[in-house]
Length: 171
Length: 103
Image (tube, rainbow over all chains, first blue to last red; front, top):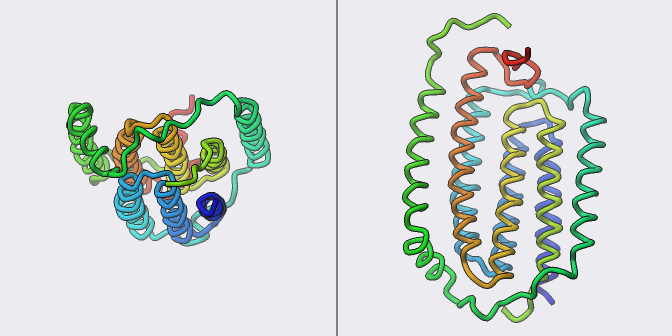
């Protein structure tokens, strides 16, 4: 029962921080709130029994990706006025997204009773061991492809972020 | 763990997070905020993977979650490199300046 309480607590933290991410005008504050969201989600992973996922969530997401965002924000030296207000069509976009979210939640609520029962007994206690075994036996080939993908992404981002060779068009 | 969190709670949380991320992509004009909103949506997918992994009772969902993290890292790196390139070319990173492909 107390786990459910913690689940709700971290869910509220994650949702509130996510709203801050999309609504705040200061990009640095938005990035820091993104860290809050990711750490709250890591806590949810722990509550769901996935400690390895929580660890890589904190290490990779909160530790690396958000730092990358912060670096770019600092590099571009974005002030608050640079960020810009909500779009001109924001009312329609907001209405559309609200309706979409409501429809999704409605569909989900209608399908509540039809989900399969939880099968907890096959999950062992050593989560990291099990994930590692799956990652290096059944998923070995996708794992190696993922490392190749990261290498490609590094090379591609270096090539993209280089000094442009084309003359800049005045826009 | 003694008590179990019903998967419906995780589903609702994931849907709400996805909705917030989609709304962020729709209503913001700052490219960095748009990228952060995409990260929020990827995180809701991750939450679904982990919740489904617990529900089904094997670790495949958590393995998929780690692959999604890899792809999110690649997406963030390339997206931010594109943001830098766009900033060099146009002088700011608002989405309304990106009209080169508009017919």
